Image (cartoon, rainbow, N blue to C red; front, side):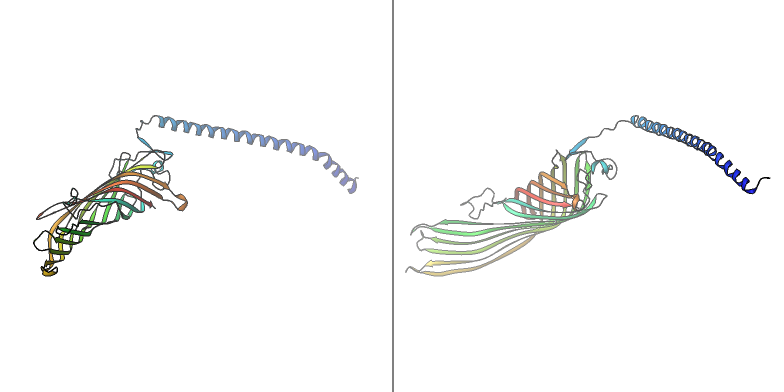
Amino acid sequence: MWSWRQLAALALWLTAVAAPAAAQTAGTADESSVLARLDAMEARLSRELDERIGAVDARIDSLQRLPAVSAEYASYGAVDFQAPVTAGPLALPIQKSVCDFCGCHCCCCPRYGLEAGAEATFLRPTLASRGTDAPPNDPTAVDFDYEAAPRIWLGYTYDDGWGLRARYWQIDAYERFESISLEGVGNDSSFLTGFFNLDAYTVDAELTRQFAWGNWCLLGALGVRHAEYRERLTFSAFNLEGTAPTDDVTLVDAEMLAVVEGTGPTLGLDARRPFGAWNLALIGGVRVSALWGKQKNSLTGNVIEFEDDGAGGLVLVNQQNLVMADSDPSTLWIGEAQGGLEWSQPYECFGGGLVFARAALEWQGWGVSQQRGGGPLVDFFGPTFSAGFVR
């Protein structure tokens, strides 16, 4: 009989002989399984790729069958953008990603958000009542130079195109005048000197609306304006009647004041048209105002007359204190026009927005009508320079 030791040795020998064969059989089976799985994966990926390519081809075919869209393109800076949509109730651009490439409404799209600016107008006043007069026809005629007149504005525009805006403008012009005619003994002599001060200002509170017309961006404004126009004439005069039988001397010191003020509606339209490759745009604007109020006139002064007493001296013969004033209802009319260029630039590094600078020519015409007549008061004309931001 076999002993248990001989049986154990036989079992170990059989295990050693069978293990390599089993391992070889298992390895062959695993390799076949991996190859089969790879073949299946390749087939599935190939089907999915064919399906996606077919979907892309179908999409391209459908786009090619769409009707052609005619659109006018304009250039702003280095980027071309599509003209804003003008149809529909809002008439605002709808393809923001095309027009608003800079992220801050710097194309022909509406400029939303807070807007503030300051403008330096250099305007030359021309008095309508004295425009063709010159000394000695009108000794008080003045020839104004260009005067610096500031304008500031602050407004906010909502994303639907509606907004609010406040504006303020003022001019203060001052000129001296004189007329001297000093003759020898026995002749008439006169001396007149003084100054003319012209002051005017406007204050506007407006409701604004942005809309587009082709490649023009328009801003309409309807609001209330209060304005005042003031002329102050102060002079001193000396007159010697040397050719009279007795030498008479007259001294005059007087001040004349004319003020027209009123409040009423104002209507304006501003336009902007981008062009070129330097972030430039044509700009223009018109405005009319009809303001109801009063016209006030006053005169204050002193008149002193002396006569020759025949002994080489002067005797006071007359002294008057002049005080006159009147007031009448009136309508103040104001018309304005402006045209020029604008340069603008986005500033994304400061949180987004737009800065702009403008140079233009401006004209203003002021006139008055009242019960006793009226007519033009003054014209202003000259260059303007402004800067501001939209945020």
